[in-house]
Image (cartoon, rainbow, N blue to C red; front, side, top):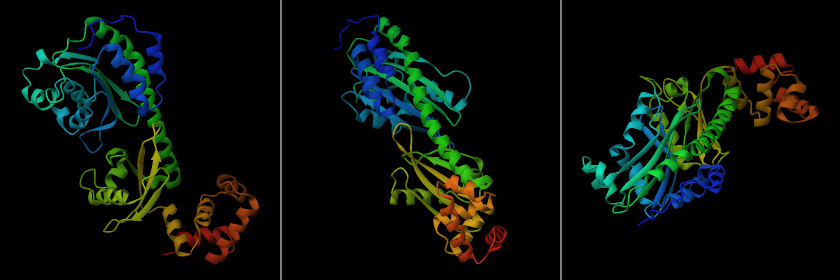
Length: 364
Protein backbone atom coordinates (compact mmCIF):
# COMPACT_ATOMS: atom_id res chain seq x y z
CA UNK A 1 0.00 0.00 0.00
CA UNK A 2 1.40 3.45 -0.87
CA UNK A 3 2.54 5.48 2.08
CA UNK A 4 0.20 8.16 3.40
CA UNK A 5 3.17 10.41 4.18
CA UNK A 6 3.45 13.19 1.67
CA UNK A 7 5.33 16.47 1.44
CA UNK A 8 2.72 19.09 0.62
CA UNK A 9 5.19 21.45 -1.04
CA UNK A 10 6.59 19.99 -4.28
CA UNK A 11 10.31 20.34 -4.64
CA UNK A 12 11.86 22.52 -7.30
CA UNK A 13 13.47 19.35 -8.61
CA UNK A 14 10.12 17.96 -9.83
CA UNK A 15 9.25 21.21 -11.60
CA UNK A 16 12.70 21.20 -13.21
CA UNK A 17 12.30 17.58 -14.27
CA UNK A 18 8.90 18.19 -15.86
CA UNK A 19 10.07 21.31 -17.69
CA UNK A 20 13.07 19.41 -19.11
CA UNK A 21 10.76 17.25 -21.27
CA UNK A 22 11.50 17.84 -24.98
CA UNK A 23 9.72 14.96 -26.71
CA UNK A 24 6.79 12.59 -26.27
CA UNK A 25 9.28 9.75 -25.79
CA UNK A 26 10.66 11.55 -22.72
CA UNK A 27 7.30 12.03 -20.97
CA UNK A 28 7.66 8.77 -19.06
CA UNK A 29 11.06 9.64 -17.61
CA UNK A 30 10.62 13.36 -17.02
CA UNK A 31 6.96 13.61 -16.01
CA UNK A 32 5.35 10.27 -15.13
CA UNK A 33 8.14 8.65 -13.10
CA UNK A 34 8.81 11.55 -10.69
CA UNK A 35 5.10 12.15 -10.15
CA UNK A 36 4.35 8.44 -9.57
CA UNK A 37 6.97 8.52 -6.83
CA UNK A 38 5.78 11.80 -5.31
CA UNK A 39 2.10 10.79 -5.32
CA UNK A 40 2.71 7.26 -4.08
CA UNK A 41 0.90 5.97 -7.18
CA UNK A 42 1.30 2.49 -8.63
CA UNK A 43 1.18 3.65 -12.26
CA UNK A 44 0.98 6.72 -14.48
CA UNK A 45 -0.08 7.26 -18.08
CA UNK A 46 0.10 9.96 -20.76
CA UNK A 47 -2.17 9.85 -23.83
CA UNK A 48 -2.67 12.12 -26.83
CA UNK A 49 -6.23 11.95 -28.18
CA UNK A 50 -7.49 13.68 -31.31
CA UNK A 51 -10.48 13.77 -33.61
CA UNK A 52 -9.83 12.61 -37.17
CA UNK A 53 -11.13 14.69 -40.12
CA UNK A 54 -12.74 11.41 -41.26
CA UNK A 55 -14.64 11.13 -38.00
CA UNK A 56 -13.97 9.20 -34.82
CA UNK A 57 -11.37 9.55 -32.12
CA UNK A 58 -7.81 8.29 -32.26
CA UNK A 59 -4.84 7.98 -29.94
CA UNK A 60 -1.48 9.40 -30.90
CA UNK A 61 1.62 9.42 -28.70
CA UNK A 62 1.33 7.67 -25.35
CA UNK A 63 3.57 6.63 -22.46
CA UNK A 64 3.11 4.42 -19.41
CA UNK A 65 4.95 3.78 -16.15
CA UNK A 66 3.84 0.83 -14.01
CA UNK A 67 3.41 -2.91 -13.89
CA UNK A 68 0.50 -3.47 -16.30
CA UNK A 69 1.35 -1.89 -19.68
CA UNK A 70 -1.25 -4.13 -21.33
CA UNK A 71 -3.89 -1.95 -19.67
CA UNK A 72 -2.98 0.88 -22.07
CA UNK A 73 -3.48 -1.32 -25.14
CA UNK A 74 -6.83 -2.53 -23.84
CA UNK A 75 -7.92 1.02 -23.08
CA UNK A 76 -7.08 2.50 -26.49
CA UNK A 77 -8.49 -0.52 -28.32
CA UNK A 78 -11.99 0.49 -27.26
CA UNK A 79 -12.51 0.33 -23.52
CA UNK A 80 -11.98 4.09 -23.29
CA UNK A 81 -15.54 4.46 -24.63
CA UNK A 82 -16.82 2.99 -21.33
CA UNK A 83 -14.74 5.30 -19.13
CA UNK A 84 -17.11 7.64 -17.22
CA UNK A 85 -14.21 9.85 -16.17
CA UNK A 86 -13.02 10.61 -19.71
CA UNK A 87 -16.51 10.75 -21.20
CA UNK A 88 -17.08 14.48 -20.52
CA UNK A 89 -13.77 15.25 -22.22
CA UNK A 90 -14.73 13.19 -25.26
CA UNK A 91 -18.07 15.02 -25.37
CA UNK A 92 -16.14 18.29 -25.37
CA UNK A 93 -14.10 17.13 -28.37
CA UNK A 94 -17.29 16.29 -30.27
CA UNK A 95 -18.90 19.65 -29.45
CA UNK A 96 -15.66 21.62 -30.06
CA UNK A 97 -16.83 24.46 -27.83
CA UNK A 98 -16.47 25.58 -24.25
CA UNK A 99 -13.68 24.67 -21.83
CA UNK A 100 -12.67 21.05 -21.42
CA UNK A 101 -12.96 19.53 -17.93
CA UNK A 102 -9.72 20.02 -16.05
CA UNK A 103 -8.86 18.09 -12.87
CA UNK A 104 -10.70 14.75 -12.74
CA UNK A 105 -10.51 12.64 -9.58
CA UNK A 106 -12.37 9.71 -8.16
CA UNK A 107 -12.31 6.60 -6.01
CA UNK A 108 -13.56 3.91 -8.32
CA UNK A 109 -14.36 1.54 -5.48
CA UNK A 110 -17.09 3.92 -4.31
CA UNK A 111 -17.97 6.09 -7.31
CA UNK A 112 -18.34 3.59 -10.13
CA UNK A 113 -20.67 0.96 -8.73
CA UNK A 114 -23.17 2.08 -11.38
CA UNK A 115 -20.70 1.18 -14.16
CA UNK A 116 -20.28 -2.59 -13.74
CA UNK A 117 -19.23 -3.16 -17.36
CA UNK A 118 -16.28 -0.78 -17.14
CA UNK A 119 -15.42 -2.02 -13.66
CA UNK A 120 -15.50 -5.69 -14.65
CA UNK A 121 -13.83 -5.40 -18.08
CA UNK A 122 -11.09 -2.90 -17.24
CA UNK A 123 -10.71 -1.70 -13.64
CA UNK A 124 -10.81 -5.07 -11.88
CA UNK A 125 -8.66 -7.00 -14.40
CA UNK A 126 -5.92 -4.34 -14.23
CA UNK A 127 -6.33 -3.60 -10.50
CA UNK A 128 -7.12 0.09 -10.86
CA UNK A 129 -9.00 1.46 -7.85
CA UNK A 130 -8.24 5.19 -7.62
CA UNK A 131 -7.37 7.80 -10.24
CA UNK A 132 -6.26 11.40 -10.33
CA UNK A 133 -6.09 12.84 -13.86
CA UNK A 134 -6.03 15.99 -15.92
CA UNK A 135 -7.26 16.44 -19.50
CA UNK A 136 -5.94 19.46 -21.37
CA UNK A 137 -7.25 20.75 -24.73
CA UNK A 138 -4.54 21.63 -27.24
CA UNK A 139 -5.51 23.81 -30.23
CA UNK A 140 -2.53 24.35 -32.51
CA UNK A 141 -4.18 25.73 -35.65
CA UNK A 142 -3.92 22.45 -37.54
CA UNK A 143 -6.00 20.33 -35.18
CA UNK A 144 -7.60 20.03 -31.76
CA UNK A 145 -6.29 17.35 -29.48
CA UNK A 146 -6.38 16.39 -25.84
CA UNK A 147 -3.35 15.61 -23.72
CA UNK A 148 -4.36 13.44 -20.76
CA UNK A 149 -2.17 12.56 -17.79
CA UNK A 150 -3.39 10.23 -15.04
CA UNK A 151 -2.07 8.41 -11.96
CA UNK A 152 -3.54 5.30 -10.34
CA UNK A 153 -3.64 3.28 -7.15
CA UNK A 154 -4.78 -0.31 -6.70
CA UNK A 155 -8.02 -1.58 -5.19
CA UNK A 156 -7.59 -1.77 -1.44
CA UNK A 157 -5.10 1.12 -1.34
CA UNK A 158 -6.06 4.34 0.37
CA UNK A 159 -7.48 7.02 -1.92
CA UNK A 160 -5.36 10.00 -2.96
CA UNK A 161 -5.30 12.49 -0.08
CA UNK A 162 -6.71 16.01 -0.43
CA UNK A 163 -3.26 17.56 -0.05
CA UNK A 164 -1.94 15.28 -2.80
CA UNK A 165 -4.73 16.37 -5.13
CA UNK A 166 -3.98 20.02 -4.33
CA UNK A 167 -0.28 19.44 -5.01
CA UNK A 168 -1.07 17.79 -8.33
CA UNK A 169 -3.31 20.70 -9.26
CA UNK A 170 -0.49 23.17 -8.60
CA UNK A 171 1.67 21.22 -11.05
CA UNK A 172 -0.95 21.31 -13.82
CA UNK A 173 0.25 24.64 -15.36
CA UNK A 174 3.78 23.24 -15.75
CA UNK A 175 2.43 20.01 -17.25
CA UNK A 176 0.18 21.93 -19.59
CA UNK A 177 2.98 24.20 -20.83
CA UNK A 178 5.27 21.25 -21.59
CA UNK A 179 2.64 19.20 -23.42
CA UNK A 180 1.39 22.25 -25.33
CA UNK A 181 4.96 22.98 -26.43
CA UNK A 182 5.24 19.41 -27.74
CA UNK A 183 1.94 19.78 -29.62
CA UNK A 184 3.13 23.06 -31.16
CA UNK A 185 6.44 21.55 -32.23
CA UNK A 186 4.57 18.76 -33.98
CA UNK A 187 2.22 21.26 -35.63
CA UNK A 188 5.22 23.30 -36.80
CA UNK A 189 6.78 20.24 -38.44
CA UNK A 190 3.47 19.49 -40.16
CA UNK A 191 3.08 23.10 -41.28
CA UNK A 192 6.58 23.28 -42.74
CA UNK A 193 6.04 20.06 -44.67
CA UNK A 194 2.68 21.26 -46.00
CA UNK A 195 4.09 24.66 -46.93
CA UNK A 196 6.94 23.07 -48.90
CA UNK A 197 4.55 20.81 -50.79
CA UNK A 198 2.17 23.72 -51.46
CA UNK A 199 4.97 25.85 -52.87
CA UNK A 200 5.98 23.05 -55.22
CA UNK A 201 2.49 21.98 -56.27
CA UNK A 202 0.74 25.34 -56.60
CA UNK A 203 -3.00 25.93 -56.48
CA UNK A 204 -3.89 22.43 -57.69
CA UNK A 205 -2.64 20.77 -54.53
CA UNK A 206 -4.71 18.69 -52.15
CA UNK A 207 -3.16 17.06 -49.11
CA UNK A 208 -3.74 14.63 -46.26
CA UNK A 209 -1.48 13.76 -43.35
CA UNK A 210 -1.40 10.18 -42.08
CA UNK A 211 0.19 9.38 -38.74
CA UNK A 212 2.38 6.39 -37.90
CA UNK A 213 -0.74 4.20 -37.64
CA UNK A 214 -1.93 5.42 -41.08
CA UNK A 215 -4.82 7.32 -39.49
CA UNK A 216 -5.84 10.57 -41.23
CA UNK A 217 -4.69 13.43 -38.99
CA UNK A 218 -5.33 16.42 -41.22
CA UNK A 219 -6.18 17.46 -44.76
CA UNK A 220 -7.58 20.23 -46.93
CA UNK A 221 -10.86 20.16 -48.86
CA UNK A 222 -9.29 19.14 -52.17
CA UNK A 223 -7.31 16.32 -50.63
CA UNK A 224 -10.39 14.98 -48.83
CA UNK A 225 -12.42 15.19 -52.05
CA UNK A 226 -9.74 13.59 -54.22
CA UNK A 227 -9.47 10.61 -51.89
CA UNK A 228 -13.20 10.14 -51.51
CA UNK A 229 -13.45 11.33 -47.92
CA UNK A 230 -15.83 14.26 -48.47
CA UNK A 231 -19.32 13.68 -49.79
CA UNK A 232 -19.92 11.73 -52.97
CA UNK A 233 -16.48 12.28 -54.47
CA UNK A 234 -15.55 10.49 -57.68
CA UNK A 235 -12.14 9.59 -56.28
CA UNK A 236 -13.50 6.87 -54.02
CA UNK A 237 -12.13 5.76 -50.67
CA UNK A 238 -10.41 2.90 -52.47
CA UNK A 239 -7.67 5.38 -53.37
CA UNK A 240 -6.84 5.88 -49.69
CA UNK A 241 -6.80 2.12 -49.30
CA UNK A 242 -4.32 1.82 -52.17
CA UNK A 243 -2.11 4.49 -50.58
CA UNK A 244 -2.07 2.58 -47.29
CA UNK A 245 -1.23 -0.68 -49.05
CA UNK A 246 1.64 0.97 -50.90
CA UNK A 247 2.91 2.52 -47.67
CA UNK A 248 2.90 -0.83 -45.90
CA UNK A 249 4.98 -2.30 -48.72
CA UNK A 250 7.31 0.70 -49.12
CA UNK A 251 10.20 2.23 -47.21
CA UNK A 252 8.54 4.20 -44.41
CA UNK A 253 11.71 5.87 -43.16
CA UNK A 254 11.71 9.70 -42.93
CA UNK A 255 12.69 11.24 -46.26
CA UNK A 256 11.51 8.33 -48.39
CA UNK A 257 8.83 9.07 -51.00
CA UNK A 258 6.93 7.52 -53.87
CA UNK A 259 4.30 8.56 -56.38
CA UNK A 260 1.74 7.09 -58.75
CA UNK A 261 -1.20 8.10 -60.93
CA UNK A 262 -4.71 6.95 -60.17
CA UNK A 263 -6.90 5.38 -62.84
CA UNK A 264 -10.54 5.86 -63.74
CA UNK A 265 -12.68 8.80 -64.83
CA UNK A 266 -10.79 11.33 -62.78
CA UNK A 267 -7.13 10.39 -62.85
CA UNK A 268 -4.73 12.48 -60.80
CA UNK A 269 -1.20 12.30 -59.45
CA UNK A 270 -0.43 11.21 -55.90
CA UNK A 271 2.85 11.74 -54.10
CA UNK A 272 3.56 10.36 -50.63
CA UNK A 273 6.42 11.77 -48.56
CA UNK A 274 7.55 10.44 -45.19
CA UNK A 275 8.69 12.99 -42.64
CA UNK A 276 9.74 13.01 -39.02
CA UNK A 277 7.68 14.85 -36.41
CA UNK A 278 9.24 16.93 -33.65
CA UNK A 279 9.18 13.98 -31.24
CA UNK A 280 10.73 11.49 -33.67
CA UNK A 281 7.66 9.71 -35.06
CA UNK A 282 7.22 9.10 -38.80
CA UNK A 283 4.17 10.69 -40.45
CA UNK A 284 3.19 10.67 -44.13
CA UNK A 285 2.20 13.63 -46.31
CA UNK A 286 -0.10 12.60 -49.19
CA UNK A 287 -0.24 15.20 -51.96
CA UNK A 288 -2.92 14.93 -54.62
CA UNK A 289 -2.72 17.01 -57.77
CA UNK A 290 -4.14 16.99 -61.26
CA UNK A 291 -4.06 19.38 -64.15
CA UNK A 292 -2.27 22.71 -64.00
CA UNK A 293 0.85 23.86 -65.79
CA UNK A 294 3.28 22.38 -63.28
CA UNK A 295 2.04 18.84 -63.82
CA UNK A 296 1.72 19.26 -67.58
CA UNK A 297 5.38 20.31 -67.61
CA UNK A 298 6.32 17.33 -65.45
CA UNK A 299 4.59 14.90 -67.81
CA UNK A 300 6.23 16.52 -70.83
CA UNK A 301 9.68 16.42 -69.24
CA UNK A 302 9.31 12.71 -68.64
CA UNK A 303 8.34 12.16 -72.28
CA UNK A 304 11.41 14.04 -73.47
CA UNK A 305 13.66 12.05 -71.16
CA UNK A 306 14.78 14.97 -68.99
CA UNK A 307 16.56 14.12 -65.76
CA UNK A 308 15.14 15.12 -62.36
CA UNK A 309 17.50 18.11 -62.21
CA UNK A 310 16.64 19.16 -65.76
CA UNK A 311 12.94 18.83 -64.97
CA UNK A 312 13.31 21.10 -61.96
CA UNK A 313 15.17 23.67 -64.04
CA UNK A 314 12.42 23.53 -66.69
CA UNK A 315 9.84 24.20 -63.99
CA UNK A 316 11.86 27.13 -62.67
CA UNK A 317 12.05 28.57 -66.20
CA UNK A 318 8.30 28.13 -66.67
CA UNK A 319 7.75 30.12 -63.46
CA UNK A 320 9.78 33.01 -64.92
CA UNK A 321 13.11 32.54 -63.12
CA UNK A 322 16.27 33.86 -64.76
CA UNK A 323 19.47 31.79 -64.86
CA UNK A 324 20.92 33.50 -61.79
CA UNK A 325 17.73 33.05 -59.75
CA UNK A 326 17.24 29.41 -60.62
CA UNK A 327 20.91 28.62 -59.93
CA UNK A 328 20.60 30.25 -56.49
CA UNK A 329 17.30 28.47 -55.81
CA UNK A 330 18.76 25.05 -56.68
CA UNK A 331 22.13 25.64 -55.04
CA UNK A 332 24.19 25.22 -58.21
CA UNK A 333 26.65 27.45 -60.01
CA UNK A 334 25.56 29.70 -62.87
CA UNK A 335 27.73 27.75 -65.30
CA UNK A 336 26.20 24.44 -64.20
CA UNK A 337 22.71 25.86 -64.66
CA UNK A 338 23.58 27.04 -68.18
CA UNK A 339 24.98 23.61 -69.05
CA UNK A 340 21.74 21.97 -67.88
CA UNK A 341 19.73 24.45 -69.95
CA UNK A 342 21.69 23.64 -73.12
CA UNK A 343 21.04 19.93 -72.52
CA UNK A 344 17.32 20.65 -72.06
CA UNK A 345 17.16 22.65 -75.30
CA UNK A 346 18.85 19.80 -77.16
CA UNK A 347 16.50 17.10 -75.81
CA UNK A 348 13.33 19.12 -76.41
CA UNK A 349 14.47 20.49 -79.78
CA UNK A 350 14.16 24.23 -79.07
CA UNK A 351 16.54 27.18 -78.91
CA UNK A 352 14.90 29.63 -76.48
CA UNK A 353 13.06 29.82 -73.19
CA UNK A 354 9.81 30.85 -74.85
CA UNK A 355 9.96 27.91 -77.26
CA UNK A 356 10.79 25.57 -74.37
CA UNK A 357 7.81 26.56 -72.22
CA UNK A 358 5.46 26.54 -75.20
CA UNK A 359 6.62 23.10 -76.27
CA UNK A 360 6.35 21.62 -72.78
CA UNK A 361 2.92 23.04 -72.07
CA UNK A 362 1.38 21.97 -75.36
CA UNK A 363 2.82 18.51 -75.80
CA UNK A 364 0.19 15.71 -75.62
